[in-house]
Image 1 (cartoon, rainbow, N blue to C red):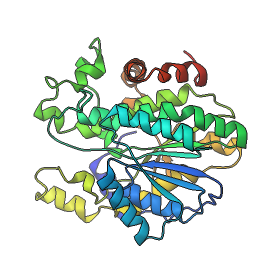
Image 2: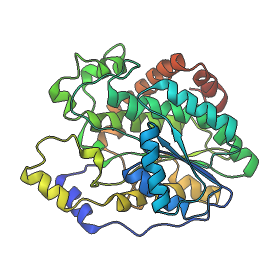
Image 3: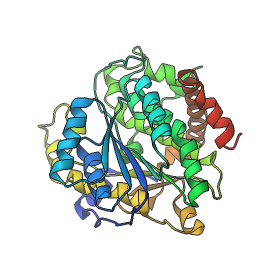
Image 4: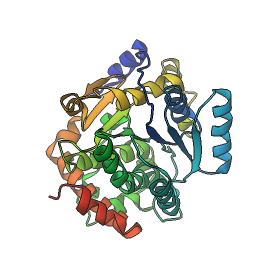
Length: 344
């Protein structure tokens, strides 16, 4: 599928569908990047649906304090603020350790935390920030929490959901052939030498594309019948949030037009809820959305490049490299792959 500027403005102008509701009695939800923006608004919605536990992950105590203030202002119930900085693998591992020890179940894992910058910066782990925050770290968290989610599926007869917040901007980019042909594509893609100012103009979009194709690889490696986990990628559309705070030249006419049709953070949070609740219930219903890409409230085809032969090559290569990299970050990754996933 192609996505043009005309498509963008048309769909933004149509508005967002109303909020979908569900009864979350007894359920546990984890949502990352929940101190501001879409994550905070989604957490507010989840909180009104009577969850047993609602875990909001924030980068640090200061951000956690912001989430707590939002909680108090919005009458959150049963919300817990846990710290995790996706720019530091050790905190992701610590978060997963805590979840394993303290949570009886995980019904919904919402991978929302992301960053968009236009200058090269490296994390403490040595990766370009967006490569780690938008791809490697959320994948690490998902893999480390898979055993608990599978246990939830088996013990409660449910289909836990992993909802990854993606972007329609993935339609506008591809991955350079020189990156795909490199011996280690992710290392080259993340390197300071490759990350020129021109490349960094689209790093957010391309890093989300890398994560999207890797997420598809994870979906294909999950058991396709219950007990299993349902993976859904969702796009919130273009929203007026702090994610765009580093975008240069926002005074241009084009950016002014974009801002005029931008969704609010609350509106942009609604697709997250659709990703969590739509087609829930029977196995037949779940199969409709497993591995799907959802915009607003409807399933859409991913980009032509993702579906192309080159896209499939990227999917397989990024998956293999991601597992190799994360397996060195945490020994449990390889165990999860061998015990929870269908091998090639």
